[in-house]
Structure formats: structure tokens, C-alpha cells
Image 1: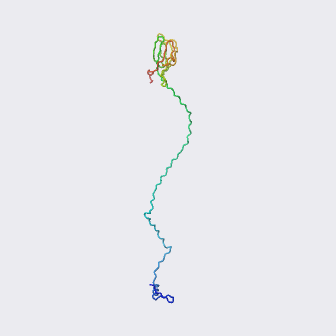
Image 2: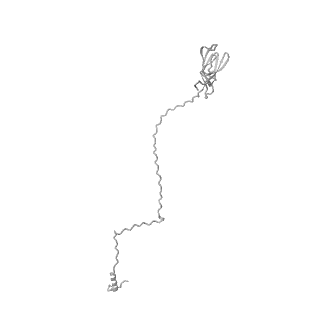
Image 3: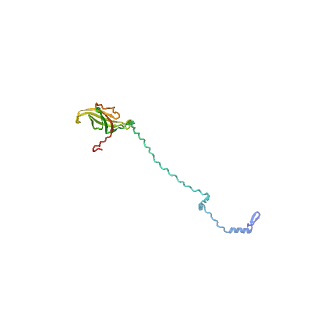
Length: 218
């Protein structure tokens, strides 16, 4: 309730009741006013953590991507120095095909003719062994047959023929005379004939020796 104010001659005069109330208010003890602390004594407020974001705004999880393995170090490639070329040998011309060798036989088959009596005789003459036919002595040094690459089969013998007379007992008498020396051919007896006034002889064929080997040899 506000005190009644009386204005007298332009001055404000409070009523007795209002004056007593004002005095009473002034005489009442005042409540102690809190003393504000100084800025230096005021502790700063503790930090307030921001509220967690809502679940919908949570950051996505970080994906861990493994790193690729480091490439292995390649071995160093050492390039050898080029070797010096070897000296080339002069080209050798190929040899022509050599002819096949003739077959050698150990026995020559001969045939002889006595022109006076017309008597003929076929005999075998081992190579290197003298064979007598009447007054003629035949020694065959070689007997060969034609090789497979020759156009026609043939036989050839290298023969030495000497003449020496004999007495009634068959013993050789008189001097030895050469009658023939050279090759005889079975297919062509007239190529190298035996020239003798009484006898004639030619080659028939060559054959392998059937004589037994000497003792101690096989």
C-alpha cells in the first residue's frame, strides 16, 4: 500500500502514517548481501563434453585395406661378354663314294687242257700253294669275286705258271721257265690266255678255303 502524499504549497508532505512506515523501514535490519568473488578466485567451469551424435549421424567404420606385398627384387642379369669366334677350318670337300671291296677267296678252281691228247682236267689250287699239272706248275697268288656294286658277277685270279720237265719217275728235271704271270678272268678266258704249244689253262671260279686252320690258330 503506497503512503498518501499531501502536496502543500508545492511541497510534498507525507502523512503521519506514511512517515512512521518509512521510519520503520529504515530502522529494520538489512539482510546481508553476498559478496561477489573476484575474477581471480572464480574457477573456470569444467568442460562439458558435447553430446554424442545421434545413431543416424554416427561416422561410418573405417575399412582396413591391406597393402599389397612389396615386389620381390629381381636378380641382376649379368650379360656375358661375347666370346671370340673360333677360327674356322677350311671346308674339306667330301670324298667320293669309294667302291666296295671285292671278296677274297682261298681257293681257285682251274681247268687245264692237253692239246696233244685232248685230255682235260679240273683241279683246285689253294692260294700260295704250287700245284703241278704234267709239266706245268700253277701258283695262285690271289682269287677274288666281284663286288656287289659291279655290273656283272665275275671271278679273277692272279696266277703264276712255270714249266719244268719230269723224268720217268716223275722227278723234275731241267730248267724252270716262266710261262704265264697275270690275271685270269672266269667270264673272259680269252682276255689273258695261257700261251703254250702243248697246254692250255683257264680260271673257272673262286671258292672259300675248306682247309683246317693250323694248330694254335682259330
